[in-house]
Amino acid sequence: MFFGSQIFRLDQVDSTNNFAANLIEQALCQNGTLVLADAQTEGKGQRVSLWESESGKNILCSYIFFPDKVSVDCLEEYSWSISLALLHCLNYFGIESKIKWPNDILVKNLKIAGILIENNIIEGKVKSMIIGIGLNVNQLDFSNVNAISMSQIKCKSFVIDEVSIILTRELNYWTSFVGKNNALIKKDYLQQLFGFQTLMRFEALGQEFEGTIIGVNHRGELEMYVQDEIKTFRNKEISFLL
Image 1 (cartoon, rainbow, N blue to C red):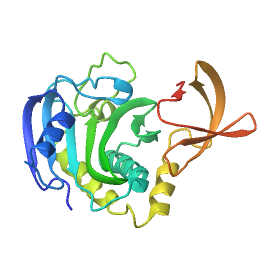
Image 2 (tube, helix red, strand yellow):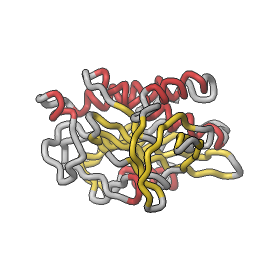
Image 3 (tube, helix red, strand yellow):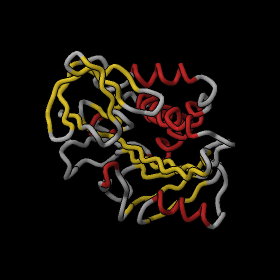
């Protein structure tokens, strides 16, 4: 399986993930299909938020994956490998970044990329996976002050297609380890995890507290050391106070 084996290029769409879902439903795509759009009217982000992007300035894409009898037990490995692919794509262009759990990408505590994975699971097996990625490339102004782009960091413009090719290459490379070398993927993911083994402030259930991230378990839950106790948190249960 090679991501990018088939490409749909769109001027505008409500969401590349929605478009990808329709392709799957109508059997109009193949394994590894890439959907690229210049603009999204309803781009999806984590926590039911919208992904802000100026038309033609950034990478807005979704990859379609039909796993071969992949168990739900491997879902976290895919999440880790996709995050690493984005991190190494940025590194190719001389940009150092960190992975903010579970799968946002930060540069200098500012969000440069996000991932939204949508799975269709039947009887404990992943029938299809849509990997939505938003990467800020050439945008210079954001209404969200916590965002940043490659162009802002390097003070130059980038060729969108070149960045997309490198991203796809890294995605193919890192996902190839899933199901084969869990230890390698997890080790690299933790090494690049924002705040790993560092005392930081968080919020959960309306309460602020200090804690230290010590790992991520096989269910994808964040493991933290809080007041001499190990606690676990699922996605959307905890917020970083940056």
